[in-house]
Image (cartoon, rainbow over all chains, first blue to last red; front, side, top):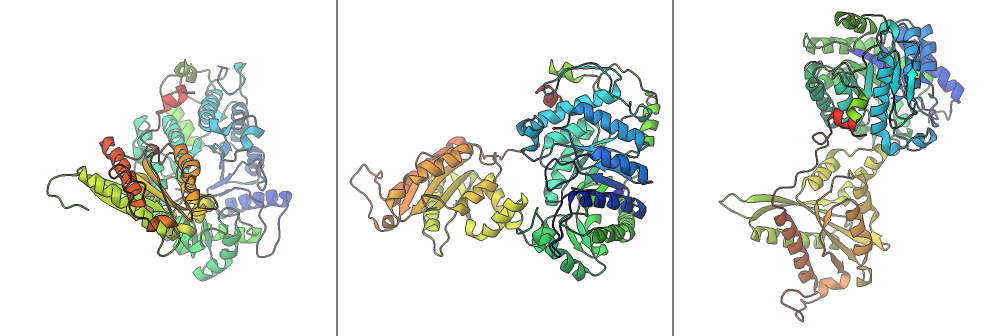
Length: 385
Length: 219
């Protein structure tokens, strides 16, 4: 199982000091956090994409491209890339570029975004969220797998003879996750393509998460990608730790009570009971997160939200150290002990995907395919007509 | 509520009320509406369970659910009771010309699809009969918007109604006293549930998800 962190990039006043970072300070803090996570040995750093304050992360591939140059091992990803309001052509180009620059040390997660005004700002309509996600992603895939694309759809200018460059590294597109909290249609989409599905459950009780993951697993099997328990699943998470559990509660409580997302609402006691938020000692985090496998089956990626609610940079870096030294090694042991042998331990790496493509005879170099979907032989527009 | 040796169809009525006092006249009205409905359903051959949800008990949790986006604990169970029932009796005190804020907040945290097709009977309490039409201009449109199957008759109880004798001036049992209006409303709701035949199943978002090829083609 991979363990990592994701950031929503919020600019929030530290309630204990009154300090509010400016955008520049916040962006630089994210870079420091990502580098620190790499040095500490975490597996994944994922950045959100937002186009409205108080969030600063508007340009994921710029940030991840820089990080690809200054980090060594960590997989760079998104949480999420907006498949609805971005031009799918730009997504195909930018993430292929990131794939080349990072030498395959990346993947990405598609999400729709739930902020109403962002859609019209980018010329779209939130009520079309799911149709946009379906059509745009179908186009991204064709741009990655076909050298020359003729395309016509509902939401974007048609393309005649278009080639997206750079072509994917070794002719194998990046691995894609789909993130959705409430929409089974997106789990269905992930299952259809055999892509990963991440349920960012940080505000949701496990009963709901379990239903969504089970649905994705069943549909993954239905579409012939393997057994349900072999589907590629990720979960979100939230933790605040100190060696001493009471110290963690005392230190985190003002951040919880004033956080823009849940502050002035439920008590920290209620919230830690009902959601994956765990405040306490590293061992308590191990106990809680080690049990999620029993709920959703072996999963391949566990992401934690650590740099939010106005927590100072120094604290965030300490949290990453605790996560890497006291939590992840234990969780890894638990996950490995519970994992059936023929269930993948991790999401596929670029090297594994290249090897799989070679084994199927779809070797390395870019090629002009027949354009059919590799699973059904159908093209999107054949289904449409 | 009824003893029976033979196999009888079972129906559950969820009663949601936003009364605040202890005792509460809103609760009293809700109980009587539920009693009238249950009696009629039993006469039609059903076993009946009545589940009462006092929104007062969930006040804080309802606001938490608004802030976090999901209900938890007892409130989650209460919502499940309402959305999985065969019929809902919804009763609110009228505050400042309309349903109470607590009542509306509860409705606001329900899924927009949760009450689609649900047989619903409406009731309200108020100080004077001059507010009785609030049931028609605010309560009824709210549930119509949610595509509930709202019973034509609703029951308004003003303070004076609790001290009014049965009206015997009209046709048999069709008078305008509170007990008679409650009975008429209960009969209407029971008739709706009975006519429906089978137990109402809540919509399952997973089983109704279109297949991907439909999603791809259905644009």
